Length: 255
Image (cartoon, rainbow, N blue to C red; front, side, top):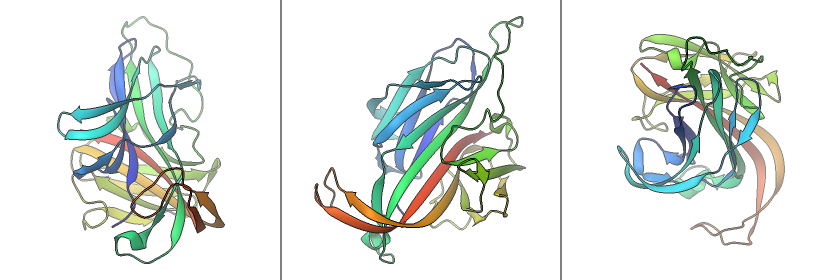
């Protein structure tokens, strides 16, 4: 068992000027009873021109297809035609694999998640919003960048990605999981290590929601002061960690 994951969901194709919602989840997609509303530092929408718009999040407790569960959602409106990025940065936390029967070793977790939203013109004569380079980047420290439009991905295609850390290509661990699979134990989950330039490919063998994850582990020690209690520690406890695990995810919908 691994630590919970942060992921984002949104309708990846919409019409410019139409209101839409974006969602934030924390847990395991294949197990709805594990899903919680994440603690996040920020939720935002990055426009095709690169402007970052902070979003207000609200908590929900029921969602069709999931049932009774906690999640966060934001109302937003992609005004211009073009590609937007809905991004999430989770509040840092700590985790130890020994809490669920794994090898002991406390680490700090920093998690980021995004989904790309394409807003089509609502008027054939409407003017496109000027695009900037890197329009599929959220601005996270660790970023998973698709080589082609993720909202055009089709089943049985191969989609290429690149991982960057602080704007530079980096070798990292990755996995790609279909939402209904146990991302920790299902043999169909695609795992590996990127090339030296951060590139890797995913074989999209079926339609539906996929979560693509990149992880970078750094040897850096420190102290985490718990600001809330869990079954493994109390609020106010000083927890010593020796590594930092940075995770970044992109959610795509495969036709």
